[in-house]
Length: 379
Image 1 (cartoon, rainbow, N blue to C red):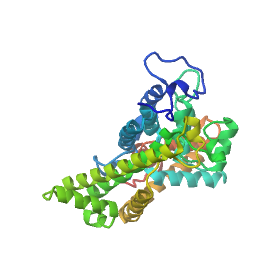
Image 2: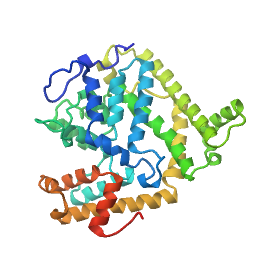
Image 3: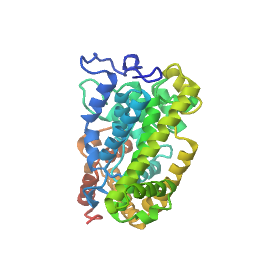
């Protein structure tokens, strides 16, 4: 049952463009449908999560990651009495602005923009909002997907004060406001942020072991992993290999989700928010892990950063990926004829180039790089 502190599609703060109500779907369901059918969502299937798309068919992509966040988020939302459709919409859209090659591509594009304009830059979370607000071309009389305020609020998980002020100038009292006055987003938005964390920690362990860059023996130094490994072997002494890993990960996810639900229920009970406005006025997020679970999660993140994300093989790959993005930006900035005419005709040329590159899939970026430079960086 939906609780009083959940977002209500009938009381949404609305869209930026007037539209008729749909007879068979509420506001948040319409948002989800618009996201699923947009171009940027389909491109996620060929965008890197950790391992580049060509490195193996079974590694996660941005699309499978987004689906896992949505699945996890809906299950938790059901437990807490939140709006499941809003959670799903936010989860499916939260990575729409990611560049090819994951965070390596983002960092390279950020450097490119800052080099031509000191106060510019690129951040995938802000770009996700830009995709749904301006870059998608689905409707005859406005740009973007025209999503509900609540979905847009959830997509913008974090934002610098400088960028928040720019958003506020364009849309007073809009999605940038909370970063200026220190208030919170909806519970559904808070939930998606932590569901994202649970999902990527779990699948990065799986992909890391599948790739051979991590071992179960290495992971035993992580407190939560080792505790779940011992539990799994106590229950199923014969387990080994992939079956053992899957059982460990399942238990880790169950621990985190159980802790999140219990801690959030306790926080909601103590705060007793009367409505969504009270949730937003809270001093800190009400969807939360317990302090011990936060520390265990932080330990896992530190391990993955040191042993997977900074593994020499991953670093070597991401260095080449950064070069692809930097080379593409340099060629496009120096030769307008290299761009598609529709992109070359846009104002704010460097931002238009960044939008174009950010929208590429891994494999399209590699093909473009080879076509324009004659180099093959990923044989």
